[in-house]
Length: 92
Image 1: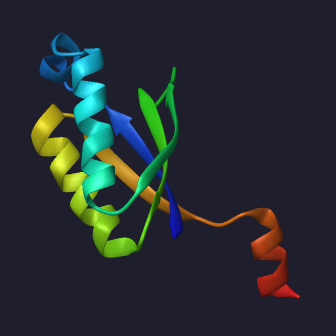
Image 2: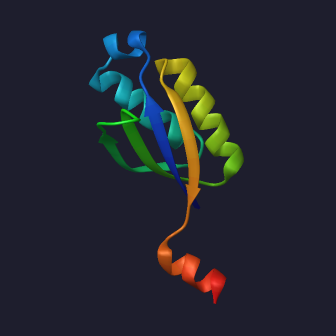
């Protein structure tokens, strides 16, 4: 499984629809793509939220991003991530 950080930015319409039900729908999208939500955080600053997720690969990450945007009106910037320990192994 690959790790992805998905940074979300609410549209004005998306803000009006914030709900626990929508959060559950978002988690289902990841599950249906063979993934898992590890953490979700609300943010202050350039982005409004971040999902830390594990998915089988980049294709599923792209599908998740599009499905989430269509469902919620939230735009996402998705970045693949590896642990620092994995990074250290790559460069040594």
